[in-house]
Each structure stands twice: as C-alpha cells, then as structure tokens.
Length: 301
Image (cartoon, rainbow, N blue to C red; front, side, top):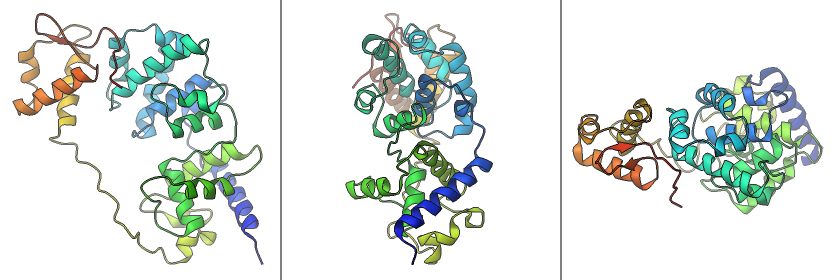
C-alpha cells in the first residue's frame, strides 16, 4: 500500500518535471539575479500580477541595481519609477528597506530569516521567499497559490482557510522536500497554482490530478464562499490613483489644487484621497498650497 511519504515523493517529482517544461521566463529567475533583485521582485509582486511586474522590475533594477543605489534616490523619484504598479506605499517601504540594509547590513540582503523579517515591508512570506529563491534555503514559502495547491492535493478541500494556522504550517512542512530540491519545489508549486490550479482549475493540464485528493473526491465546493474582489472603479483608491498620476506626470513639479480637484468628479471623495496620500507620505503639501511628490520618505508605521 502506498504510504504518505511515497505520495509526497511522487508529487514532488511530477511537479518538478512539469515546472522544468512550463515555468514562465520571468527576469528575476535568470541565473545570477542578486538577492536584492529577488527581494525587489517579491515586493513588487505583492497583490500584483507578475506580467505587470516584469517590465517594471527590469527598469527598476537597471536604475537601482543595489540597495545603496536605491537608498540614495529621492522619494519622489522612487514613487515616479513605481509608476502604476499600484499600492505605491510599497515603493516607499522598499526605499526605506534599502536604507536600513545600508545602515545595518553593509548594503547586503541578510541571509537570515529573523533579520529579513525585521526589514521594513518584509513579512513572513517575503522573508521565506528570499531565503528560498535568493539563497537556496529550505523555507516555508506560503503564498495564496501554494496554499491552494496544498489544500486540494493533500487535504482534499477547495481552498485554504483565510488565515495560515499552525497546523497548516506543520502540514506543509511535512511535504516540503528535506533536501536541496526544496526551493525549486516551492517555486514549482507556486507556478502550478498560478497557471493551472487556479480558483477555477484546469485539471486536465495538471500533472498531479490523478493523485489530487480534491479532484478524486469530485471537487467538492468550498464550505465558505470566497470573498469577492474589492471593486476599484469609483473607490477612494481609484481617486488616489488619479492624484498620484497627476503628481508623477508633473515630473517633480508641484500641482495646484484646482488641477487636482478637476481630476475627480466627487470633491469630498477627492479630499479624502488627497488627505490619505499626505498621511501616508506619498505626497506633500507645499507652503503655497500646491501638492507634489515627497522630498523625503516619511512613512507612517
């Protein structure tokens, strides 16, 4: 009778074989990418499709190939370079992260999980991803795609619970290879979740469908409904985006309030958006009442 260990080993072999033929050609996966390049890619890819990230990552790394290069840049340049990737506070966090790396780690990305977690904007997932993909260490890289694959293949449920539990971490650790394959295995499972084992899966393309507990059970529906994605059109976030676009397009110059008010139909909503940008350190109000990108990266914690 097949054992759990045998099942885990077959899964690893099949997913790694699939990945060898189906991995996307993403620039940060190229040989020789620095730990800094990996860290930048992971921050950029938070809540953003990698197809949008790829050209921005190339431009960013060409301009600021090291933490020291980014640390010496102005906050305004950093936000402008971030362009339309969304959630621009990530740009300021990355800027601050570069400064901390120069101040505390001699301008190098530390090869230590605790040290990585101490960096601005770096949480458990990103720290583990850098340890795995930059340094080749065995680390629990649990993003939404990896968790979905694990839930279906090994647990037999449609999706993972909203929050990572201690039990889920232990279960994932039990199937993560103990040898040098662990980093690539994590990358392969992540890719499988992104391309095949999606919320609406393409099981006919899956290399492990015949041993997937959820698939074999007839794909039972999730016990709880997945939350609908938050609407963007007409929201304060869209209003913020309009203001940010004006400030970026100004090329470092200030923008008068009248121009900003003309960018959005709801004046009250626009004021909320502007005040939130000022509070987040993404914009500055000048003495003459005009608004510009920030001179320094002052970040609310």
